[in-house]
Image (cartoon, rainbow, N blue to C red; front, side, top):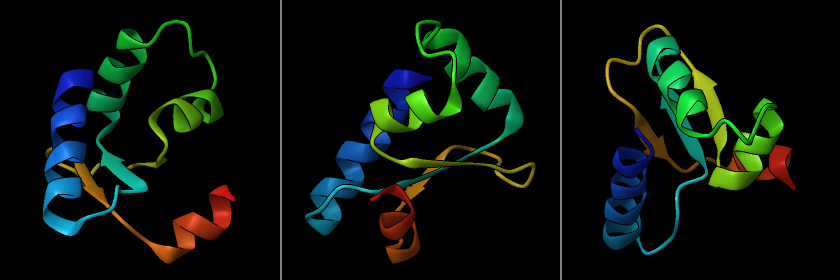
Length: 76
């Protein structure tokens, strides 16, 4: 899961010229991500590690990254 998200981030950066600050992910994929990062027990730690706000949504079929000014304000 982590390598998939890394590829999404790199593709986004390549296309837009700046990194994403939002990750939208399904509850199942979020559980897989947490399993990949057992040393990060808190969601806030995961957010800092990834450098993105994490939105868990049942509507997210696949993980998706984006950029939002709102996320910049909330993480500052």
